[in-house]
Length: 131
Length: 131
DNA sequence: CAGCATCCTTATTGATACTG
DNA sequence: CAGTATCAATAAGGATGCTG
Image (cartoon, rainbow over all chains, first blue to last red; front, side, top):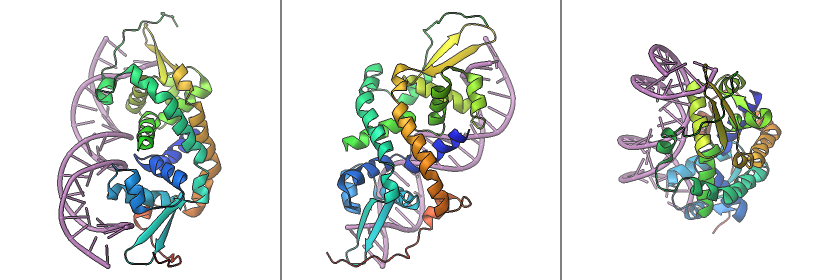
């Protein structure tokens, strides 16, 4: 129950479709400009990138350094606090590399996962163990 | 970019408001019945618990063992594959315990985080470094 | 007991156009 | 360049009641 709260909060911070990817980029490259991040994550829109960065900044995960100049220049980097997330990110990344393959073997890449979940069938009949 | 895909997929699997908590319970208690899980996570609804468990089952993270009897009895447990997620869960849990406190210091528990993010202000003026 | 079906509310993500 | 603003679409989450 308290555990539940922990995980929920942690997911608020690093959940979201792009946050782990953004953090990973910043871990790898150190300091990055807005446009660099956008190039690294080709599928993210400017709006989403801005939103996610603002949330990460709010949680003191990334630092935003604004250069007062024309044209504007803004650099993002992990904060001290943000760097403490490294083990979590790395654990996720490692697991992904090691185990996502397994899922592709289970069900081919094709169909929507939601449909597949709904379609769960029971062709399994474990032993009947009376109460 | 490939990294992005990794993280996105991993979040599909362990993202969702309750999945980490469910998995954590199963890690701690081994095998649990549906009703036991519900008691452990008092705020989850039956619908959400069912949905999340089905998704975890689809991804071969939890095993669902059905006893053909009246009244029904269903037991959930982590699969072999699911147990490989342990490092990720533990990293999240550790980080939560160690660093969530820090956030409470930054901004009091009160206001909605979304509002707070929107209200981010710039009273910070870093050095001006021309291009 | 362990769900499923239905309906509904909120949150997240995205496309597009405009701005200092 | 680094954003905002607006609008629209989709997804996630939840309340409630019914069922084998």
